[in-house]
Amino acid sequence: MAQGKSDPNYKVAAENRRARFDYAIEDDLECGIVLEGSEVKSLRAGGANIAESYAHVDNGELWLINSYIAPYDQAKSFKHEERRPRKLLVSRKELSNLWNATQRKGMTLVPLVLYFNHRGRAKLKIGIAKGKKLHDKRDTSAKRDWNRQKQRLLKERG
Image 1: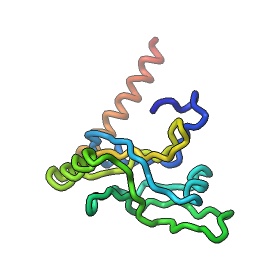
Image 2 (image 1 turned 135 degrees about the vertical axis):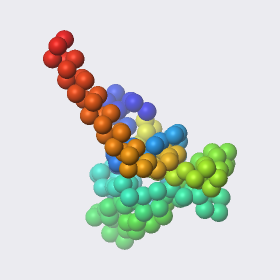
Image 3 (image 1 turned 60 degrees about the vertical axis):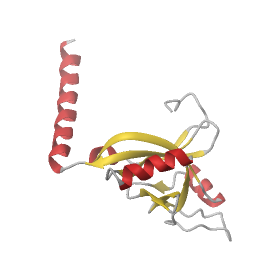
Image 4 (image 1 turned 30 degrees about the vertical axis):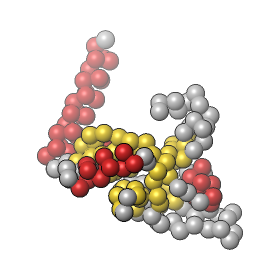
């Protein structure tokens, strides 16, 4: 996935930067997303937010809940709902693994990145995560600060 600069089709539409701070990501999974035409145009223009959204397994299907895709102004009669549930596309085996993780192990499905892959298809990277407690968040913050300080010291002293 780290093809960013070399591939002209690869483009990040939305990123959930807070997810790695609030959750301990155990594993991640790339899945397709079912979109309407005006939603794709709006995503290409950069009008999306997945920060408050989550994924949910319901009746044998995977859904993205509470994601925001801005309305596309040029779509006159074919406008879309901004916060509608959007179906995610995964294989049956992956779907059963996700269901087991959420129902039996108490994990959460957190969207990490919404992007267009090298073929120009919209994809969503979902993290299988466990929520962090407040002290875990403090530890993460302290480690990040220490690593930043360590890099500065190494840079200064050569």
